[in-house]
Image (cartoon, rainbow, N blue to C red; front, top):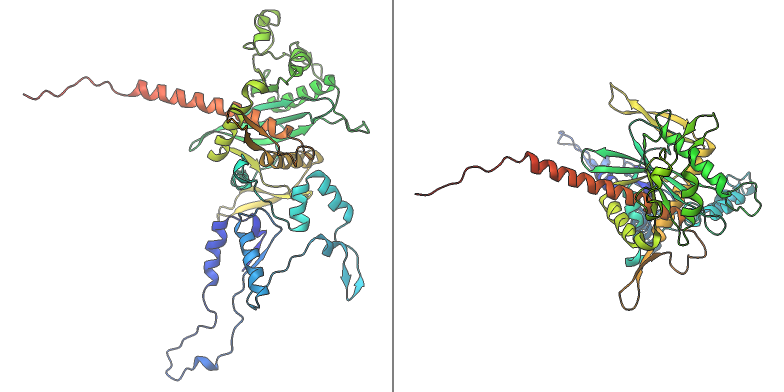
Amino acid sequence: MFFDEAAFCADELIVVCEAFATQNTDFVTDTDDSYNPETQPRKVPTQLVYASSQDTMDKLFYRYYKNFAKRMIAGDRDYFVCDMICDVAIQVYMNGKPYKALLTRDKVEAALKSNASKARREYFNVPERDGGVNQIVKWGTVRRNERKYLPQLYWDKQYKYVIAFDPARTMDNSIVSVMRIYNDPENGMCGDIINCVNMVDLANAKKYKMDSNRQIDELRDIILHYNGQNPDYEYIDTLMVDQGAGGGGTSTYADGLLNNWTDKSGTEHRGFIDANHELYEGYDARYPDAVDKLRLISPRKFRSVMFEELIELMNLGVIHFPLEYNGGDYVQVTDGVDKTTGQEILKTHELSLEEQTIWVNIDLMKNEITSMQKTTNSENTTVTYALPPDRIHKMHDDRAYTLVLLAHRLYELRRKDKVRQSAVETMTAPPICISNIDF
């Protein structure tokens, strides 16, 4: 029995399938009194093979890897563990002579620069270790919330979309993330992370971000992609913008979104306004066409609350991610169900460069959010959510923060839905008009 990519299989699936290999293949019986099972040739015993790169230390695959290695080292010939890192595929030999490499060193180094933790798992078999009690989101939680879907680039009438924007110009990344929201019959309002874009100026040698004007243009294009050919912002639930510690999100970006604008095809579109924000009180009269779907979020006021909301939603399993990207150009997707066999019909989908980039950024988002830790000061009066000191200069947290913004909006929608359901239940409850009188 062969388990491919065993580290990414559900532990329950492995345990259930292993039960089919418990029977002794040498067990044979016969109704003939003269039958002697000792004279029968022995059969090859059932073997269990687990092949995979590493994932996290809490997965069954890693526990097997560790325990089976101990049994093999102790001399138990029923167990064999082979740990092949990327060097085996880079320095290839055939019959003792150098052979064409299956993998190049450049690809490994590029993967280490892009997502070091993932590259260590894939190419060096180093499992992820959760960050202890202070880690706000465990890798196991992320894996449970992964679903089999592709990044989505354009509008789909089945969903509405929440867009989160954490702008920056020089030091940090400027990230736009998109979540599609829908009402699940069992879990209520849920959200799928479907896009994550880093607004880097590719023409700049130092990889600075785009200037604010081009960032606004790019943001508007993303908004149009998820609204489709529909009236302005019909399918856009909310545009969440980080106000910034110095208010840069307000002066540069929120102000720039107030006016109507014209897209590349010459069609005019309405602007955005946060009519409930103190800075824009009365501005709805100045900008009557602006749609009140912009929300400016102050990190000083709401950061801790929003992180707590994200933790709750992740534990509930209502925020979903696509499965981890394997780095390939093609992926198998479901194309209906075979009516005769009841099995899924798979077809090969060629990933565009944009889809691949989005998928990589979503994986980086997972890595960032699982690196965030919760700390308190010595007086237990202040709670901080940030990267640990050993990672603060090695990675960013902007993708994680856009995820926090998206979770904040989903939390609001779920709260409104609960209030609405409670109101309906109260209204539909029959009045109690009869009392029992005991004479």
